[in-house]
Amino acid sequence: MKKKFRKNEIIIHNGNKFIHLDEDSHTIGNCERIAKQIKELLPDIIMFELPRQKNPFEILNTQRPNQKSENLIKNIKRNSKQARGNFEIIYETIERIWLEKQHQVLLFRFDAPLELTSNCITLPNDWQIEGIVWNYLREKYMTQFINENNDLFIGRKTVIQCHNHHWKNIKFLLKNPSVKMIWKHYFVDFAKSINVETYSIEKMLNILKKNKRDTLLKYWKLMSDLNE
Image (spheres, rainbow, N blue to C red):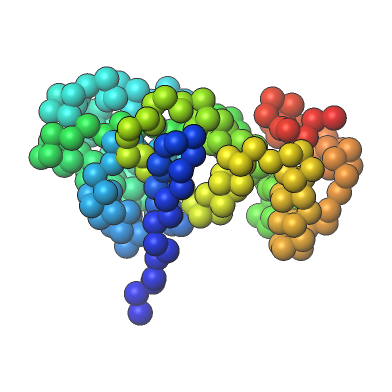
């Protein structure tokens, strides 16, 4: 029985339209689905749930569709195959759009810095308070990218490719919620939904210190709306 995928959701933020593609796994079937949707949508911008760092996207975005560096494209597909399994299927579709349609598609990584995204390796396998903090901080970066690049999206069809869990929280943060609402959303309601104990901010930060979550503490100071 084939899995039924959610219909792409469209939101308007600051007058710009964003289309969400759910990236719930990197199986062949799921990557083929995303690739098909990209082909049908023919977007101008695609934002990937990938860490921010210097990458070939920056160079490719300066090149015309029919002048993209073949070596860079090969490297992207090879690296994606190593890191994300079947993700190269998506890049192959984008490459065909560049070459066959002569349509410019700009690519961006809009997740947090690699230092933070890779921190999941040291987190518990089950969802504890550290996991909630980790995702909250990443989603702060994702929302920041959208807000800080508003002019980039004007008049362009923009696709946001990320897990549905992140998408729900991005939509919430884009509404510019109060500190109280953010705390309740992440650290009360969501925590309870996955049977994680709710703490005060002070006690939560003490847990991070006790467990030596230095990276989380570092980015908490940089990005959190909940700093006391």
